[in-house]
Amino acid sequence: MTNTISADDGLLTTRIARFIVETDARALPAEVMQGARNALLDTVGVGLIGSREPVSTIAQKLVTEIGAKPRATLWGTPLRSSPFEAASANGTCAHALDFDDSHPSVRGHASAPTIATVLAVGESSGAPGAAVLSAYAIGLEIAGKLGRAMGPGHYMRGWHATSTISTFSAAAAAGRLWHLDVPQMRTALSIAASQLSGLVRNFGTMTKPFHAGRAARAGMLAAWLAKNGHTADEAIFDGRNNVLSTYSSGDGEALADVVAAFGAPWEVVSPGNWVKRWPCCYAGHRAIGGMFKLVEQHKLRAEEIQSVAVGFMKGSETALISTNPQTGLEGKFSVEYMIAATVLDRRLVLETFTDRMVQRPEARALMAKVRRYIVDDGKVYGLDATNDVEVETARGRFKIHVEHTPGSLDWPMTDADRRDKFNGCAEPVLGKAGAAKLLDLIMRCGELPDVGELLRATVPVAE
Image 1: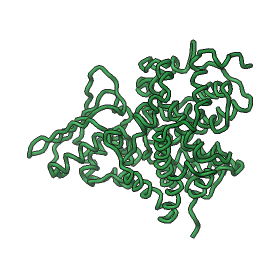
Image 2 (image 1 turned 120 degrees about the vertical axis):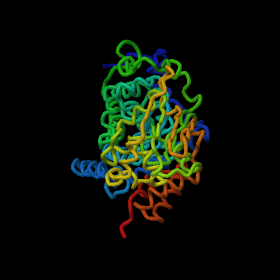
Image 3 (image 1 turned 60 degrees about the horizontal axis):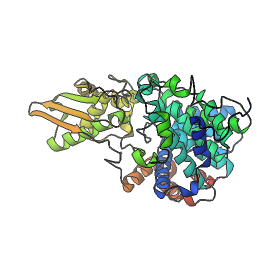
Image 4 (image 1 turned 120 degrees about the horizontal axis):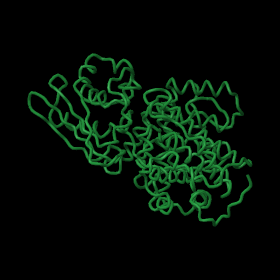
């Protein structure tokens, strides 16, 4: 197919492509670059500790089997591969523990695939750190705005937005770093659209983090093919059978409106990425935060609890697919287990979500006392919802209404919290000195002449 569309055609596909290609990185506000750096910090940290998970070792084994040219680093390992395979493996390990940040507009984890993309492309092409950060910010902008246009029905129908929508952010970010022009970017978006996949049904299994790695690779592949002359439809967001009419339930914002709002505000700033305090599905974090407050305020003990009721706004519980988890992975998607562990352990850490901990008799007994219910006000919600938590004991009933989500702008992580989380994830893999070196490079990423220096610091030093 030859290029038959002008740069001033007025089509939404062209407007999206022009934003990706023509945005001046030098004009990005400081708060945008800071938001990108925070996403880099969080994603690389959780990716390092995630690199030791079984799903990640399988991904690393596949990379070794493929045997591609060693041009990009697999975080937390001495392995190197093509940027495609490195991004796939790194995106998987960044989402392996479900500890990576989330974005409410996307209803998913756009940072894991997008950061994996920009670091793999950036390292293999010798890009400076500032270009890598700006490519991430532009990619996240695409994911956030398209997430708003896709609407909540996309997720509720069973599509995993981390996998579907982040394919576009990966294509946009890779396209920026590979210097695609507007016609090529239109093509890349179209090729990306033909690779959208990923089902919520696979939550609680290794396939969920695989979605993040797959999105990174698919988006990169779309950009590379477009750059090298591959053809595709030139207006995939316009006309009949476009992306939204195919994948959306028609309950999102008008695409023309969100395109007009590119950068106003930037998605990395508002609503921003929401950073997890606990390594489990974000849909349960408000309930966890509320339960921690009730336990602290009323000195609640597991043995006195008769029942716990957790109220969810309609749609906000969609990801919590497990009511009777049997494994640690399933426990990450069970508010019943999250509540039980909060009461029993007074903390939620990586060890909380293991098979052994989920199978504890005391945890199973308390899970049986937790029930969830839906608050239906006629709307459908995502992360930007509320929860009610009510605990019944012989001493009485204790209730809390939780309006804000831990890790959001309204209940934020401090800079010290972010660094502590990073160190807790990076030190077991790199040691204290190695983690400190990498932290310094991440904080100075915008000044690095070659982001490869940062990637080399993700490799453990042999003792």
